[in-house]
Image: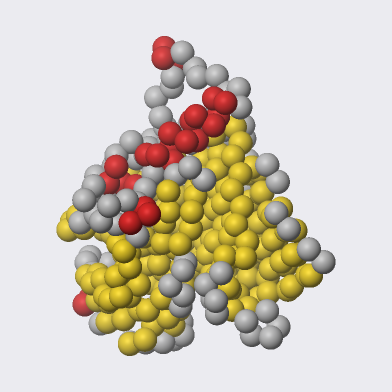
Length: 338
């Protein structure tokens, strides 16, 4: 992620964004408890912010895809990445990166962030509003309509967590989204539907390497429970034993903050020498949450769910099925190479 920040800064400079004199640099704002819907909006002045969604969607014939759509923001620049992976073949059928100069929005304004012709928006509609993502792709476009099906979840204490050793960050999720998508590829238009997850996070932790390395699990169980586990790694990709965040949502919507959990990486472990000497990614995981009596074994739904981010590296980001334990679907993010 430090490389990502460097790339964003360099690209912003190339685009003509001048750096402010040292004396004019403002002290970053403090992280405050999350208040919605106000905090769907951008938070200018923070060192790092992102809006993120991932999920599983399928066409009318039942062919399944995983999608990933995010915008990262720093004071210097914005980076958007959108992709679509065919889970039956592992082929990345859509992949688009775009970079733009930093945010100009005012704090508290409606979410309406655009990076080139990729945009993330939120509008009031129904009980919880609706997010839309629009992205022009090399052969057409991808549009997503993301409607929260249950109340937003504030992680940590009123939406404030400890980002490893990097200090506090604000973090909340929409754990169950109804997703309607349109994928236009040349002359072919494919409607897709399914479920997804949405995250929004911001803070001033970007300069601490271990705050930008993590394993993250977002699970929607068929019995109505939602689970989020977030553990931080050191610069050697070893877990920081006391640096983690966990949240369990009951089927009735009651939120429980977890005191501990265990993650065991399972075979197959895939070496990726193209990403650096000794870099490996697991394709299976065992998650144990004793206080919730949960023991889940996950297996990726495709071995090729790697996402290459413009100039910054490659992360694992993909759908995984639960092969042991309560039935359900998880999304896993492994950012150890950033």
